Length: 587
Ligand SMILES: C=C(OP(=O)(O)O)C(=O)O
Image (cartoon, rainbow, N blue to C red; front, side, top):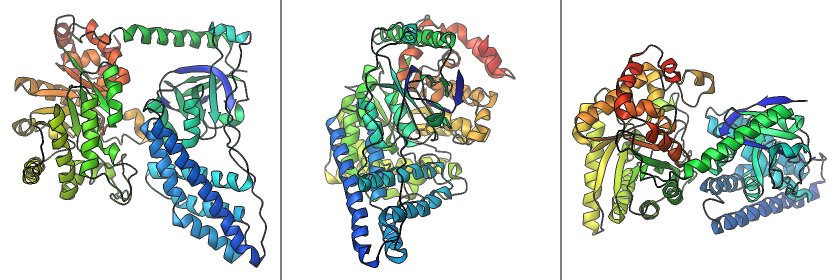
């Protein structure tokens, strides 16, 4: 019987295949009291289990280090770091010791009791990202229990499957694709998953910022998380469709649905094939307007992929990703310099725009250097405010970026500015960083200076920004959040997060027009730039520089090649002035 399970769409695309159920990750735990003379040996059993899991993670880290960024994305390494940190947390072991020595619980019982204590602390956390780390804690505790009980990994390597008669609907000569269904997936599971043949996956739990979702997106595998009950309702070998666009899993689809999705999937593949031919085609509109299509990247290792995707530069390097998960060990000047230099070299002479650290709200680092407990983190000490509050750290980053500029074309982009005083303070720190490098006799290169326009106050005082900066980049993700007063990470108001709200369109259009009038470069680097339903509108507004996830570049290029920018301009003006712009886009 066909049924569907709804979850959250976290990685786009359609996967059709047979379900492989990841065995329930729960290990049965016996509860009994020990003799006082057994206390030490029980504590040792937990320590040995913990050390074995630490060793396992170290081995995985080595495996990852030997792999390229495509096989083992940097997010995976970051997940392993989080697991190591949790394993080495003294509260875990001291708590376990307490339950064993004071209550005489056996080792497994003590571990699960302490897990419950710690899990409650995670439940009480306000920050969604931190709350989701509870799942990581459960995973590491589970792995220790497995070692203590001598039980292997819950992920069985998938066996190749031959076609059945129904498989013929896919009209495919290779083995049937497999789709993994799990309660949740740990970083170690994800590594195994990456090396296997899975075409997509669904999990019972997980939010949009869960580790599983982060890794899935970076791997470009269709995925749905938070599909509650899927690991119970789906049976091994069931046919399943993962619709990563709609965030739904269809179980046991009827032949008609299967054929329909198979068709959609083949269309998407054909489209991908067609698009790949556009890689070397210059992005020029029908009326001869040149358009710059740039990539958004998170780590230096992403640069070669951006070149392969046809990017003509990096429009946004989100440098904060270098800092994430580095509790007590923030990257210093040399490490940052090497990272920025690697990105610059990876782009083979193409320009790289490095945004200074943009942490806060949905992008917290960790409690050693940021405070997630603010009432309104999106309106709090984040991005440039955070950098200006710690000039020594900011100067370290500025020096590293300036030094990397000696190796290629680098633009320096400052996030979240609103006040002229912040602009002046920032620019004098840039000068100060140059002076420091002069004093130390270290070479550095010229940089163009740019500001993100992501707060309505900035969009409404553009003249000030244009006086100080060489170029502007419109961060539509935050601009929408701050214009409409919608927390971009809050699911309950997600339906009101509207890129086509007339107020948003006006701020974007006026920023582009003003930059144009003054001959200053302007790009859009938020999600709007990679949304093909908005390409014509942005072109009509006069935008000629788009920065987006590399996977979107060719699809946007196709829209550009089909567009007549001059004819789009009056239509775009009507859309901006409309009461309901979305209805005009549909026409
Ligand atoms: C590109 C942007 O920045 P972030 O990294 O916050 O998405 C934006 O706000 O549009």
